Amino acid sequence: MTIATVILAAGQGKRMKSKRAKVLHPIAGRPMILYSVETARQLPSDRIIVVVAHQAEAVKSVLEARPVEIVHQGRLLGTGHAVLQTQPALADFKGPVLILNGDVPLIAVETLQSMLKLHRDQGADLTLLTATFPNPEGYGRVIRDPDGDPIAVIEEADATPVQRGVREVNTGFYLVNAPFLFEVLKELKSDNAQKEYYLTDIIGAAVRTGRKLCTVSARDTDEVTGINSRADLALIEKAIARRIAGRHMREGVTLLDPETTWIEADVTIGRDTVIYPGVRIEGASRIGEDCVIHSHTRISNCRLGTGVTVRDSCVLAESVIEDGAAVGPFAHLRSGTVLHKGARVGNFVETKKTELGEGSKANHLTYLGDAVIGKEVNIGAGTITCNYDGLNKHRTVIEDDVFVGSDTQFVAPVRIGRGAVIGAGSTITKDVPPDSLAISRVPQEIKKDWAKRKKKVKGKR
Ligand code: UD1
Ligand code: CA
Image (cartoon, rainbow, N blue to C red; front, side, top):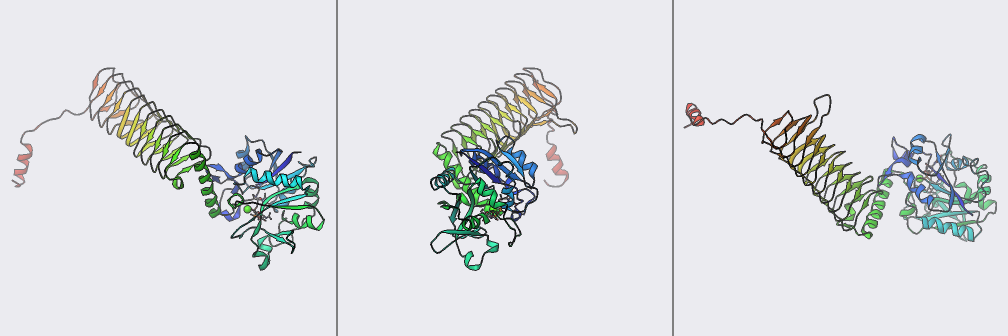
């Protein structure tokens, strides 16, 4: 017998004080809602239904490629009301419904599996996952009778001071047999502090109607921590970062300080790569084996080959860096940069939509934009591609084995033929044929004793 899963994601998340719906806030680069969805996909769940309302279109677009059904909650009248909206979709479903809050991303599949096992073994109508928090603030409290049997969940806003003292809380994970669930949801009342239809009232209702109610306690509190505020978000972000770091270290990556290394959820890193403190790697970045990434560098959606070195304080975005290439310190590779094998980009160099060929170097103080540069080219210090004329962007093409002297400007569009040499200090406005020298600076003059005479006039000597 399989289960159906309902994920609640309709709320705004008022306590976040955000323009963005809570479940869309990214954690380790992935929208919060995807954590619940990905966990649900690992369970024997035929159907995953996500309840949406606030910023529904944006939430739906995040879920687009996932095998989920969407149910709209017309008005936000509470968690009980949200689940009731799935009744038409689940009309023919008679098995257990797993209900998850979309703001509790760290729940482990194993925990839900053990809940499911207990639910089946005990023949329960309702199984609730609880946890004991040192500080239970904000959660619904699990109220038990003197025998220790659960009798109700009371929301904090409705709790008496004694009930608030209870540290066992409702984690927001439930397994409820569908017929009982929808029967009881229709009976819910909103006569409480928040004037909402509380899903949690089904616990009291199960007790009153003599249903079989089980509880399971989660061991790890991180796993069931809900995100209601920015402080909760930071806490969970850190917890996820630790898990991701642990996974990479187990797979053979050296993180010199995992506490200050931030690797987003979808990043892959090859073995024996060494990452220094304070590095952040984002998006769909793919880092090869034997790379070294030094401190204070941010890498976003890049592909690094084998044995790439990134020195301190670089920003790399949407770029490809092939085997053995080296970048930095203090380099900025912008979108569309390709460094071919063994190429080097050094201090204070910015690149954009630029290809630097095998073994080529741009080591100091340079801007390369919309340029295609061949193999074994030396770009001298202070070289600038003048790629923008105020209206359009133009290309600079530099063929293999060109030597560009320092302080050169290429006024694009311009092409430099294979093996040519550009004299230092040149402004290149016309194409340069292969193997020739181009030099455009003003010839140097010497005026002998000029300085001496000038000083005499001023009475200095
Ligand atoms: C809820 C529980 C509380 C539990 C806690 C665990 C209720 C009444 N309370 O409180 O007992 O300790 O979770 O984290 O259920 N949502 C909807 N539609 C709505 C309202 C909420 O889909 O009308 C969604 C939200 O988007 C969110 C989830 O339900 O993903 C939980 O809502 P939230 O307001 O965060 O409930 P809590 O106050 O945390
Ligand atoms: Ca919550």
